[in-house]
Length: 138
Image (cartoon, rainbow, N blue to C red; front, side, top):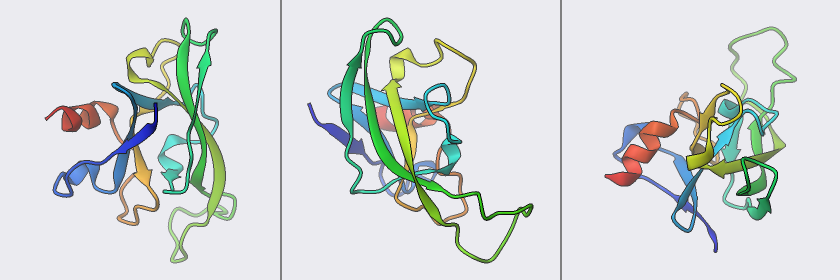
């Protein structure tokens, strides 16, 4: 089965510029437990290719998705909260788990909506997965 990028209608403001990852009937989400980088820094370029693999020892056995995506670089933000220069991007590996299996390990954050490329609207690239699922279901 192919990994699909689901997009909401452009008028759904909270989902503008974001995607949800699906494989077959399953929606996937990212959890901090599997990803070393802050989830709010991630962007999924169109060229990103996802690999699916079954992990029998993770959450009693689930198929995960992994890819190399882009993340906002923070190394050159030496002690400042705001600046005029655009943020640089760096490569970042990600792992997504099926949404039904989230929150079974730690109280860490999780998100199902990823920024598609660079958002550039001053919005956080990732927000609540619950709103995403609501937008997908109607």
